[in-house]
Figure (cartoon, rainbow, N blue to C red):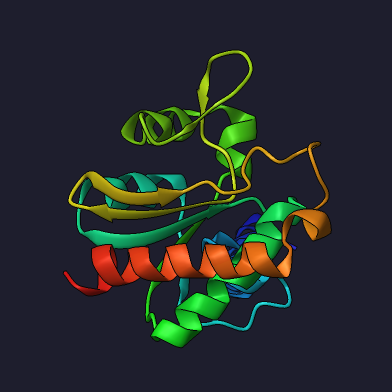
Length: 196
């Protein structure tokens, strides 16, 4: 083979290889495009038995925005906590009865364990409405429910956020306790959320 033919064959091979790489790149980028999309979480990702569609799961950044602006009903939970699991069951009864159409859910586990800036900023925005622990620190704990209007907390409930070792979930949530809780939350939602 003469050098000119070799050169032409080499160029054809390079062009074919380039085209194959381009096709592979396009194919793989389409195949894995969904991996680059941020996952949209739903309440079922945290509480698998919860079928309610009025929850909008929010990140720490969105939570900060909700605390600063708007009229919002916010539930802060911890999906790993039995008290949060029972608390959401109790507030769902109320939300369904009152036909609430939007509740923002923030699971504090990621931000709290990472101790990132979102966690500290949320804590700062809720200062005065947090639970003081044994070391005199105001901590953002779960479960807790907040009604916030343009940066002002109008109502909050941290009923069982500090109940780690003091009693079991079942012994705390007696029938009488459920009735008291439902009455308090229903009144608060009617007064501070629905009548605005």
